[in-house]
Amino acid sequence: MQEPVTEGGATAVAQPNIALIKYWGKRDEQLFIPMTSSLSMTLDIFRTTTTVRLGTEADVDSVALNGKAASGEAERRVLVFLDLVRELAGRKERAVVDTHNEAPTGAGVASSASGFAALALAASAAYGLDLDARALSRLARRGSGSASRSVYGGFVQWHKGQGEGADADLSSYAEPVPVGDIDPALVIALVDGGPKSVSSRAAMRSTVDTSPLYQGWADSSEGDLTEMRRALSRGDFEAVGEIAERNALGMHATMLAARPAVRYLSPATVTVLDRVLQLRADGIPAYATMDAGPNVKVLCRRADADRVAEAVREAMTAGSVVVAGSGPGARLLTEGG
Ligand code: 2P0
Image (cartoon, rainbow, N blue to C red; front, top):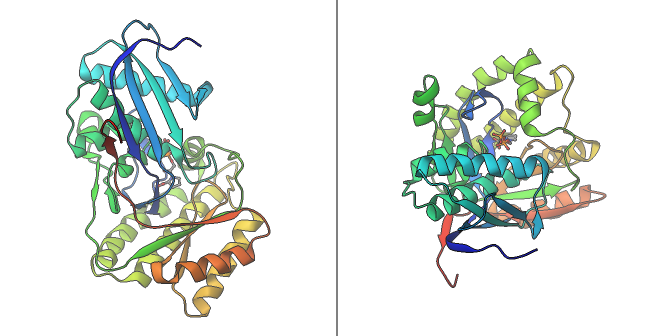
């Protein structure tokens, strides 16, 4: 393949986040406005690095993911996003996008969050848009809802926003949340590295449309969020963990009640959940959360992370365990790194 002629360009890095209060359901699919507010922790692992250059002669965008030309839905989502950035910037040049992902794709450690946070930052810089963090978070949201949160490091709340249309778009953004002294770690049990059976986007749509349990969870999630913010600010680790675990289990309950049911949890997931209960019975504060896949993320204190990782590893017959801490938000790389 001939190298395209390019000029300028920007490289950005972002990392995934794991929600402690989940985002599950949109009230505006076009603008990515969520049904509920959510709250997450940005991780210090699994970087996505994205370079966007402007093609001076190209008449189409070119997108590479991990060194291979992107295709299908993954490519389409990037092209739609680039159109949005061009519209905001009032520019017409096509882009050459090169993305490298350290995370295993498709199994619940969402690469779409780090991917669209990095793309939003690199593309807005390449097209000369001067966005503040809130505007960048709103832009990243249009690529993938959870990406709005990866713009920031540490603990982050994504506001569901108010009103409809432009009002909702302006008021649905993420921002950092103050936290007391909790020194958290997430022990990630990658019980299955394969692609997910149903995309989270399709699964959340069908849950909202068909699950009789959905509204109950959405209502209770508002209370969970309020309690979570209080627990974080007073540094109450046990309360943070308990709220996160019940919010995640509730989200999965809504999916199990969807018609047809969406079940991401596998026997290996349940085995790890049992091990987490056992850890608590043994006096170690450890709490589980799961996303749109069978993997389990165990929230614990950093001081307990090795012990928790060991216990989880022992419970697993396959897969691997990764330990993450709290990480930084999206940032631009300057030339030379
Ligand atoms: C979250 N998840 O809060 C929730 C919990 C999965 C389970 O955000 O359609 O890839 O691109 O906005 O952000 C995964 O959904 O969905 C997700 P879109 P996204 O982390």
